[in-house]
Image 1 (cartoon, rainbow, N blue to C red):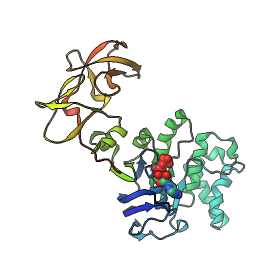
Image 2: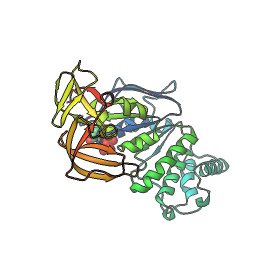
Image 3: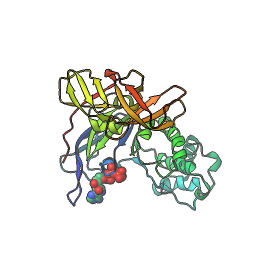
Image 4: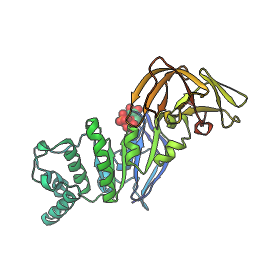
Length: 344
Ligand SMILES: Nc1ncnc2c1ncn2[C@@H]1O[C@H](COP(=O)(O)OP(=O)(O)OP(=O)(O)O)[C@@H](O)[C@H]1O
């Protein structure tokens, strides 16, 4: 089922403009992540799609060709998974999954067949009769998903589904979650403020800020072609290189850097992956930190940008804090982004 939002906006009764007028399309079977800092409007957008909030006048929401703008939540056939799974702790896995189907007054045989189907899909067979209390965080998450899938929703909405878990478990489960969503071939929209999670799970990511979608694209597209500084900083932690431009070069506090072009008013950004330590590099700074990351070292250098400029070192002997190092950045690795007009 595809989703089309046209001119969808939300102003809460107290006047808070949580979502500015937004046009977005989600394709059938696509997994899209809404990514952005706290308060940017992610949950509001999700709740508008669910039918839990009424959009402002002039908004329209379609599921395929159905206009659902005024359809209440119970008729939209969307499944929802929240941060706190809201499972019944004293009931079994099977009872939790069957609960919603019983509320719909489906025949007992149908309930059992659907529950068995999702229990199998979510690999919960060994736990079907176990109480929720006796499950791990990851197993509970699978029950929450199975319960959301059981009524055969047209669309699945997930609000920070992994954020209640500790970091190690979260990393493991995000691959599992991505695989499960693909197995069900459902259009899924999930909210997160964690860029690694968004990039790992989603086919496309919508980066939001101040009630606006700043950019939507594949993870690769957002990483390689951010259109605004905010997206470059939020996806892949790019840092700004400040300085004056002279003769096609940027004069930074750490040295001169060749620019690929000098035509317009832009800001220059770079990512650690594109900063190389090199004896004849044109930038100079002082090593402040050295972190071993398995395949390489990440070296934090002061004296070039505000704060630290991170560079990768792939050799065996990294520099030490206090050392003076030289670095180079290929002109084509620089991200030249239009100066941002700050939203009110
Ligand atoms: N019922 C409400 N009444 C008034 N303002 C609200 C209401 N719900 C949310 N807001 C405001 O709308 C804005 C967007 O909130 P929303 O919950 O959509 O953000 P979010 O991106 O999901 O944030 P978080 O990551 O912290 O959950 C915020 O400024 C929030 O304070």
